[in-house]
Length: 143
Image 1: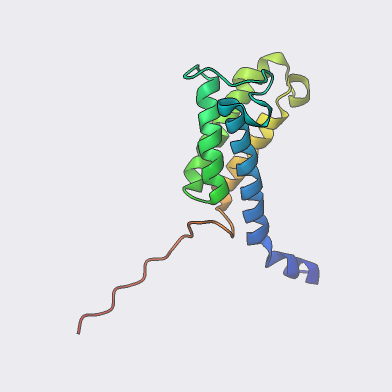
Image 2: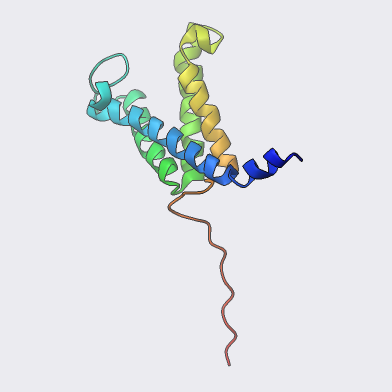
């Protein structure tokens, strides 16, 4: 192992934590744009998606809620799995019919989000999460 590997390895949890925060915040911003019309509104429409419309409104809710949960590191594994699945659905159902490859069907964002969230589901939150995994401490013996 080189000295650079040893130095960067100690920062890996922080890099993972920053990655989690950035990906979650970007995902949440897509949901907020679609639901509330902020940041330019729903992609492609300039406004908001109508309430309850399948699948766009529900996708926006998943984006906002799961993005925030992942960004803050709260219930991140479940939120990351749900977010990854929703983006896989978006890729295969919405984008794939327009072409085989992401560059052909405009599905790069869906593919990148799907794989990023799947990675986060397996790696954990890294550092900087609001909720840290705690090991249960044994009860002191009664005297």
